[in-house]
Every structure is written in C-alpha cells, then in structure tokens.
Amino acid sequence: MSQQDRKAIPLLSISTVMRITDLTARQIRYYEEHHLISPQRTEGNRRMFSLNDIDALLEVRELLEQGINMAGVKLVFNMKAAGKTAKRSDTLKISDQELRAILREEMQAQMLQRTSG
Image (cartoon, rainbow, N blue to C red):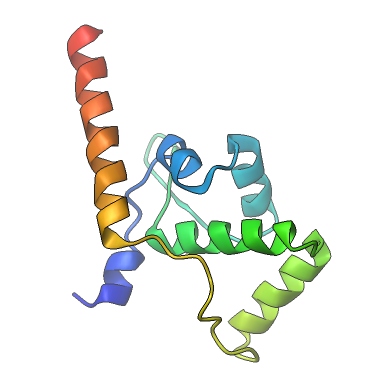
C-alpha cells in the first residue's frame, strides 16, 4: 500500500480532527458543506476523516488566517483540483510522530471511557 493510499484511509473521528486542527465541529461541517473536504461515513452515519482531509482542513485554516475569504479558499481548492497550481511546499503537515501521539492519546481516552462507563 502506498503512502498516498494510507493517507486516504478514513480513520479519525471528528473529535480527534478537532484536536488536531484546532477547529470546531461546526467549522469542519461548514467546510464539508462547501466541498473542501469529503469525509467518509460509517454505517451509523458518523464522519470518519482521512489524513488528506486533515491536510485540507489545515490548509483552509492557514488561508483564512492569511486573510483570504471563503470564495478565495474555494478558488484555490478548485485550481488545485484542476491541476493548475503547484503543490505548496509550505502547507501545514502533521508529522507521523505527532499523529501517532494524538492517536495514542485518543485510543487511551476511549479505553478509559469504556472502562469507567
């Protein structure tokens, strides 16, 4: 399995994504409504996010922080999808080590929740 394939696997819940990206659930759903991300759904209709979704959310946040409005963000994403822009090398990325630490914390929290509840 290639690294690109691994990055496309939906495995993160919205609560984990909120912690990684420092975005609210409402912001994440808003960006989904505007087709900037496309999380998969479980049989129970829960969103599951891939690392590609995380990268997109971090890029949206960065563009907004730079003063670009949502129309501009959509334009950037549409141009990237059309292959008209080069991939930005300074786009925020999560290191494998940071991701593992976050996932480990999330799994421990879920295990603690199951044993106490």
